[in-house]
Image (cartoon, rainbow, N blue to C red):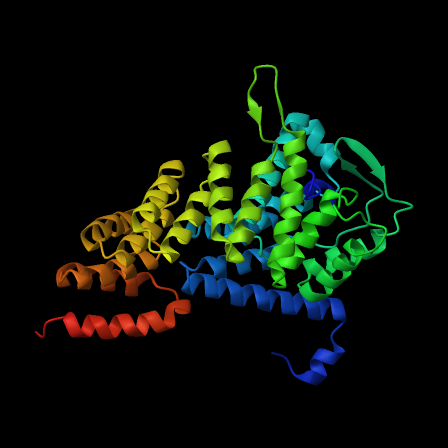
Length: 407
């Protein structure tokens, strides 16, 4: 995410016990790796419509440096669940590893423009991932190495004499491996140090970014919102008109969105609504703001507003059929069952591998007394639902038995 997430291209670079003890460690690891991969491949075959399973299979491919297979698994996971953040983050880090030690060869073969396009896509995917879920797992980012320098507001800052850099590196690495409390405490210790200005103007953007993530993951929502607000202000200060007078937001909207999301999570709904509306005013394409506004309006029972925002999200991103499922769910909560059935029937057609669509359709159809549609939807759900829907599968079978006439 621009200058705050240091660009990914810079930060990423059952046997008997006796027999197992006699196996050289490298061979034992290889055998375990083959077993893990085989087990995940079998899970993906059985639960072929489960995005999480395909993501986890991609992670194992990634660990074993099977780059093409990892990409294929993560793209399938993203196709099954377009708002699933972790596969996006996996795809973002993949080029750095896939071409490790071969950038010179790639430059000669494909040219600088191709390399730039890879990194541009990585940045885009990383930003999308964190907008979709700022709590996304960070383990694929790997170890954060101490930077010799970083760029802040167009200036190159050398870190050799920075008193905070050691703790910052440790805190970021704690965050990446899921030690969120330790990460927050270490990064918070830096920001609370007397050597740091209270307005945090002397704190580098990448440190604020990671502190915000750590704060959000440990329940310090207000502090996370403040970090993202500072980053928004910094981005706003950098914004300018180009020669044609076109407004260039320079990633500020992503930070503004996250600041608004923290307000929502913290229960400050008026500020959240204003923030999401502002992001849309500057970039109507940031449809996640419509999604969050719809959720806010649902919590207060403003159904017309919620439905409008759901519809706007679909208009902006018509290639994501899961947004149709969300609209159908909102219509169902608003007890607008006729329209809900129409929308969810469309979702079943456009998202044929998403079990939520026929499951939701069956519920709406039952509300309308349309047992024919309900039976068809339940049958469809049972045909495609992965094992992670075990409770819903049990319920669906019981409901199907109740509405299926005896022969």
